[in-house]
Image 1 (cartoon, rainbow, N blue to C red):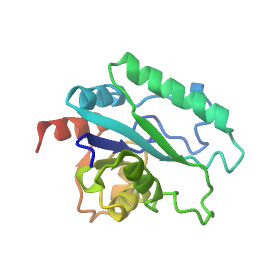
Image 2: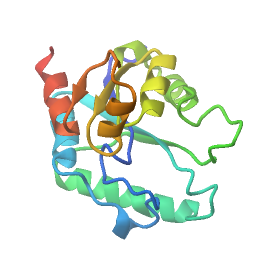
Image 3: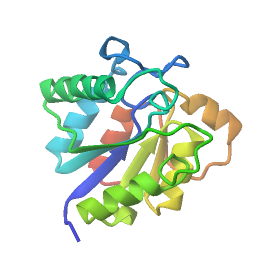
Image 4: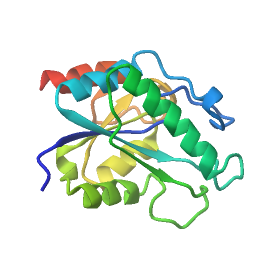
Length: 181
């Protein structure tokens, strides 16, 4: 097993501002305050970062794979400019009605990541803003955390008894992780 420590992140609502209209271009991808610094902080403390994201805009025809790659190029470039790195990005291209095994809340993307990187998911944090993220993290036996950005506040209202760590932002979660508490 890989001795690397990983923190897995949902994308929309955790790293960047979410949109009910979907993020369809690099111009629409706007980082949440402190998120780029959070990824840099994790990297500086020896954690590797991977992104695990549902991207049903592909199935809906709102963007194509080339445009998604441009969005991810922008994300990686901005993270790099802040001293951080994203080691891998895993995305589900399917719609909500798909029978795929990769769309969160199913654990398929996390399991694919774990297999390809030979990582024990029970040693990985998975930070998200929606109940789907939390359910996928639990199903994969990762350590889920919730942030209040994106859909996080609504998730807390809808699921007030979640027994997981909750943070205001990704930066707050990153500070907690690197503190070793």
